[in-house]
Length: 464
Image (cartoon, rainbow, N blue to C red; front, side):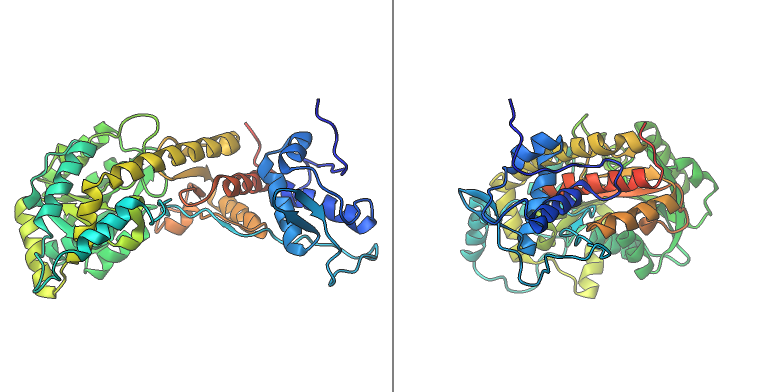
């Protein structure tokens, strides 16, 4: 039987304040009023959370806030104790004064920001020792990339995505967006238009505009790109950019029927498909669907990156293109003096051979699967969730104005959550909240989800 603790905390589920702030306010009031005296040992976060019927993260957040303000002190191995009142605080607050709890530390729910393993791994150290033991490179590297790395990536794509890819079709890049820019530059023609998902990936649209292409915004639904909308596209559409494995940012998975429909459109209109295989490594319910590049290698430029696995700071990726186009892209790089870094390529080759890529993907997949479940448990009662079972973000579909209101409410409590309209150009509705959980630890995510749930309830979104 759980005995009650020495502190009295009463939570009001109708109160718009998040639960950690309510707990902190109660404890602060007890200390101010003298019922919690200096030196009193508070119950553990686990015990108090069990008494209150809340997640342990709620109490931990409250304790952290009061420790930061100086009301409590944590003693390693002993517990959390009431400290002497902070010198800047007047204990006899007038009844007319309004005490405002400071916002907790900010939590950013940014999509596309991955968890990456500590860089002190043995494989990481070996990779750079391998690089350091080779002579420094002289002259320009191969504009298509180191042939050994391209061979290793050919094996990776065959193992991970079922793609039969010759190294001659691979070009090493600085990332998916860089690869898109290279391919668009090599394919540029007067008045060329690129059809893009809307809402979609802003960096991709910026890269297209920078290379002289115009854009056609194509709406998305729960399954991704609305391919039917392309039937009325103007004749100067020369390319289609798509994220079929986990549409960014709505999370839709493009079904095989639409993939085939898109390929038929590309062949009938002599169009190139740019497939950004975003989040294909991270599926938790079923295996990923076949890549468009596997279904139509003659019509697809496939874009990959290490940014979502080994980290964006490495600045390496690849594209797979029809062989003649791969040669054109390499020739374009020579003209503009854009060569891939040989030391970086050799380091990535070492990491691939050492199994670091596979270990990282497996570890990240386990981590994201658990966070995917947390999001579902906390928010599924408020509406449609898109993107569950894959990737590192989930989208809660809402009216666009309501989503903006809820996002502003969450920010008041230190939680920054993006909205779908931030990624939209022409199509603003439906809107929604984009819950990115890649880099967020479980405790911060639990707190953020509680804040969002409270804000949704406060603004009239009813539980289903």
